[in-house]
Image (cartoon, rainbow, N blue to C red):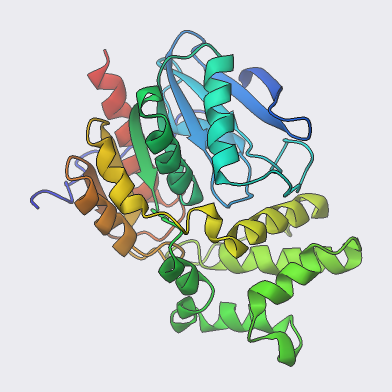
Length: 325
């Protein structure tokens, strides 16, 4: 397995901030409407951005991985997330439904094939989508690989305490001692409460745990969290719903299924010190997809906004642009 970690001779920065030229909601069921937006070149090479979480939603910085003169950039908030409605709804909300939504949006926009870009949970969803609709995918750019296996979920909600004992202790200390042995169940019982005074603080503490282990170096925050509590609760509800169900792919072996994608150009980017999604999953995905390019960034954790990861992601989108011009 030669040249798994190609040297990056050029440092790439995010593209300038972008405004959307179109946004709307796509009604996908009687209950759910999915928000999407487009920016960049309306006649450009289509790329769809799949956000993480599950439950996070999209933000404007995610538009900036792509050259706006070349790409038709499409972002969507998954069911129950961000600007999709109803916010925080977990009914009719599973991985197969999200895959169906992505394909429905592609058809709605009149796109034949698109580049699929997904990180963390978005990498799981990107793989599930490509496996279900291989003829819809021109390429894959995947970051911080997460395959929703029991070992990965056990790491996130347990073993990571070996590296972040203070973050783990803070997560548990919110709970009564007799509930600390089952934090997922205990937080779930709170964030699904109809009483916002119960759900809100639990959601804030739950979400803060993942944020605290995202990057190699601690994040410096100059202001308090200004995210509306309803958004925080929705994010926690969707994420806990998915984790309780092994993200609805626990019964599948995505590594075996990914072997069918050998015809799809694939780039995998992974932080060496990713404490949310450890590198073993990226390594095993590369072995399942020998044609893929794997870059392990030596001085990065999980966040896409760490310098080395950002540079590698932009380099990957630029490589696609160059190959199609």
